[in-house]
Structures are given as C-alpha cells and as structure tokens.
Length: 379
Image 1 (cartoon, rainbow, N blue to C red):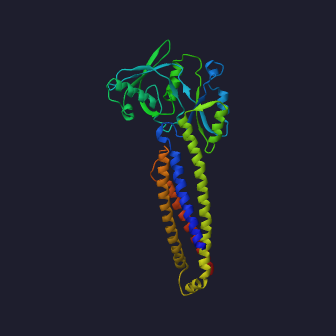
Image 2 (image 1 turned 90 degrees about the vertical axis):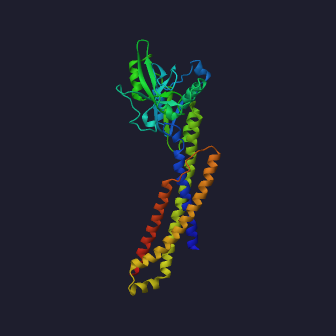
Image 3 (image 1 turned 60 degrees about the vertical axis):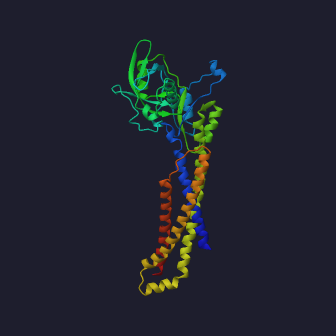
C-alpha cells in the first residue's frame, strides 16, 4: 500500500510537470511570429476624447509622466516611441510595382524591444539603404492597389526584396535614401526605421522645435499584468486589443501553469520521500538476508545494485505511464486551444522532457544514497 500510494503520487507529479512545463514554454512563445516586436512589448497611448479634440487635454507624454510610469512596480522597461519631426514621403523604386509616392509617418523604438538581431537593425550615412518595418495593413493596401491595376499581388517575402525610396525634407532642403523592407508588424500603425536614421533626420531636417511623444513602448513584469491593466484604466491609457489580449492570456496562463508546476513538484517530493522510506523498509525487512550475503562474500555494491535495479524498473514504468497521460492531455488541450482561436506550436518541447529526466535522475540518486548508507552501516 505504501508503494502504491508513492507510485500514484509520482505518476500524478510527473504528469503535472510534463503538461505545465510544456505549456509554460508554448504560451510564452505565443505571438512571437506575429510581429517583429518582442512578444512581451506593448505600445500604449492616451485615449482621445472630446476634450483632447478641443485641445483642453494633451495627448502627449511628458518626461515626468514617463519617469512616473517607469517607477511603477509592474513595469519592467519603458521607452518613448520617437516620432518624425520632418516631412517624409515613400515612393516605389521597383519594376514589379507601378510608381507610387505618398506622405508617410515614421516612428522608431528602442531595438531592445524588437525580437530581431540588433546588429541587422541599424543605419549609418554610408549605408546603401534604410531598413524599414512596415505595418501589415500597408501590404494589404499595396496589394489592393496592384489588384486594381491588374498586377499580380505580392507576398511578404517578395515585398522584402522590392526597392523603395524615402524622401526626407523641410522647407529648405530635401534628401533621398534607398530603402528596403526588413519585416512587418501588426502592433504599430506607422513605418518603423532605426533610431540612428530618425536621429539623423530629426537633427538635419527639423520642422518644429520639439517632437512630441504620443506613444510609449513597454514590457510588463510576469504576474503583474492585472496591475498594469488597472493603471491603464485609471490613467485613460489604451493599447491595441490584440496586444492586451495576448498579454492578459500570458499572464493568466503563467499563473495557472506555475501553480500546477508547484503542485506537481510538491507531489513528486512527497512521493519521493515515501519511496525512500519504502526502500528503507525493504532493507530493514531483509536485514538478516543482507547481512548473511555480505558475510559469505557478496559485495555491498552488488546488493545495492539489485535493490536499485528494482526501483529503477518501477520508476520507468511510472514515467512511461505519465508520458502516455501527457500525450493524451496534450492532444486534447491543443484541440481546445485551436477551437478557441489560440494558435500555438503543437510540437513537443525539449524543456519538459529535460526537467522530467532531471527529476528522474534525482529520484535515482536519492535512493542510491539512502541504500548505500544503510548497506555500509550493516557492514
């Protein structure tokens, strides 16, 4: 009965750990492929009201407001989204597209908030082109235009190889740079360029004294999303519904899965202690036989090996059973998440298997140490 209770606890513990660690990894990956922004980054701005339209309430963030927000205990990092303070237009420069030129709005964010290689997201005056990150709506607009003209529509991969030109100017002068699309985002409605290019253009082609900060980009500490959401409501701030939904989902699932992981680890610990006691019980019940075997020449290591082999066999059976439970649970949960519109990777995670193997080895080591101590005590 003691062994049965211990094995049931180990089975539940292993199963909880398999499921919780796997989905902790997958939920934290959710949203990564949707944007070049870091999957934890959220862009916020002040809500526009009638008072804002009448210029009675400001829509930009002051330095004091940014500093105050950065000091909140739920904020991990926050930076201003830099706006262009110069006239700028974008034109096509490719044989695959008809000539189009349009005034645009540029922004730049700290590259630490981008889920891309920072060395690739940079610009110098000597560079051949300016890298851009475009909103996906821009590509939809281009394809609507090309479709109306009877031109084949273009995919994201093809768009990245097309040529463009960025024209920056003020009332006195104008400058043109070649540009290429680096990636796409659904989180920001403007075209993103590197900070170095934005700084260069703002310094050399300013049209006003100070560029206002109308948006902030930030990351929220794990488990603190509820506090952040409450702060936004109290201070009349808003963000894209999709970004908030992903952040809320991750926060909720992280808490839930962390609790399940804790329960699994505690269950494994308790069952491990019971199994160690069981191995001691085996030893005490067979103390006379073990002493006799040692007196007629059997080595302590051989006796330890026999008992440990028996325990390893039991552990392996429990581990295989928990893997079957995990696979069945995963198939069910993946299907439920997919039906509810949450598309996560369905492949197995190496971390879940790695943690289970580590726990398994700790089980073996604990029992080996206990048996070794008891056997050598008899000797």
